[in-house]
Length: 148
Image (tube, rainbow, N blue to C red; front, side):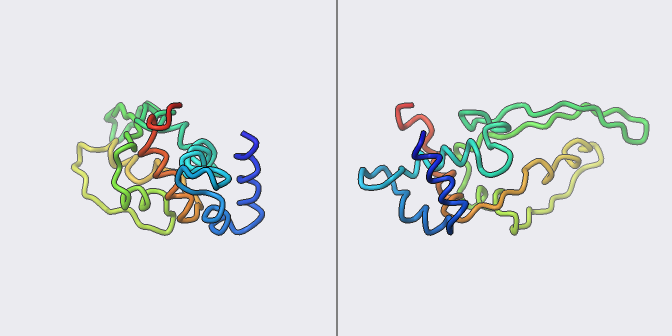
């Protein structure tokens, strides 16, 4: 736990990309923290809303909210759910996390009121460097493999 705190503060103070490349490595005994451990730390606390809050401790997704939306005197019972991200494609993952990337526009049917309301508006914006995104991706795609 102490090594996680130290690496976090070092990444805030110094250039995080240089630190993560020099101190974080795939499961080697010669490095300060493994890529898996660093990814887990960032998944739980990515300098913003925790990924765990919406996607769960297992990254399989969960119910976030239910609400009623009224449009033109018609009630819509809407649900916001996160998806399972343990099998997400790397490029899709980066697009979702990178605040400079634009999400793909899609057309909605008139009956898809709830879908249109929540599309593209549920992921918080994160300001992570590429190596941090890579570490989180590594963690979520290897959950359960490290005998936790």
